[in-house]
Image 1 (tube, rainbow, N blue to C red):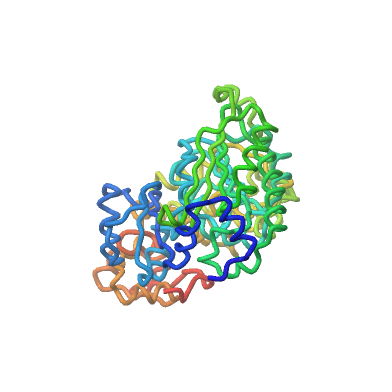
Image 2 (cartoon, helix red, strand yellow):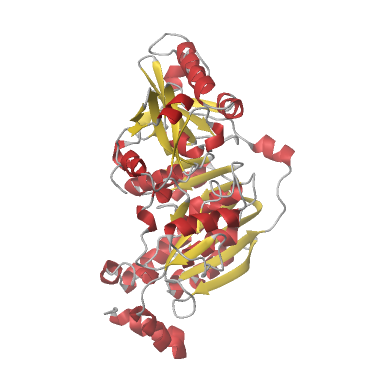
Length: 484
């Protein structure tokens, strides 16, 4: 690999005797790894037992684990787990192995308020969500609009219920969420030196000037992160670059500007020492204890959804709250009486009582004709660009309710009354992911009632279908088809 001359000079001075070993690492193949999604895996058996069964079907041995992350394994380059139905159902996330170190270092506890400030494409956010479970709140932010859509899609695929995806500058969020979060992940935009082997174009884009620009931006982002962190909270800062200017020097600056922080841990993952492309991580802890529950409640702000809040380009339901356009009837959640009846009918006939109650008793909000369930922790979204406001439940269409793909992937098979059961080796499974109808056997047709059904593969939800006799009409999203 032809590395930039200035980069070579800088790294030789920095690494000294290790330079040759570092340089030799570029001649090796890059490492591939996947991390299992414990929001879905390990609900019916032990996590280890269930992972073993999945890996067996993927024909990937479990002999090499990523030691710094939970439930993560290396696999050979010739394997293609991204083309398997299990990937589309969100059972695992394919991620650069050393990048898994940052979220593992933050390791938030269930119930916490967590921010992933530079979140796309979603590897760290989806990893953080496994620590939270379905409790607390995860705000995943990405300033780039297109990348925020990809982030939102990965949040959906992994079945995360308690995430809000925002599309904002860190300064805007800092002015909106002062002292709000318990834990913040800052995987800062960087010069990408650790991506040279994975993305050759990163070599062409590298320059000393870009390193300096990145460092200045990283300092600004970290300052904004500090504004949003509660007393006693934690920031994990990470980059995929080797530059001291973007790593140790940024941390040194931050500690000078914020003397109430200390470094609890600082670590580098080098490609000549670890099985990965390289990563820098630093754990920064703010002094002071966490606020009591009473203080948290006092500081909480009520859910506020205004006309300048947008989800996927649609205005929120504030006007609908005052007067529903279709029926003229008022409702505090933005759902008309008629639409609420349609929702309840769907829930009563399709989901279990427990799951139906979780939805109907949650904080529901309308964005146009789209229905979302917000996380249980109150958060003010007024004036914030939102890509995904919690769990997308579905859409109201001409006197009917149509459930979302997000809802399907957030469910467990046991939470649906009507289930179409497939296996990964069934030819109809590939057809389903490509948009084809499913034909039921006589036995299956007798078990499935007419109407909405959760299509599951090996017990894991894959999407919605609509049963009519022996035929199941496909409702797998058109934009996701033809990937398997």
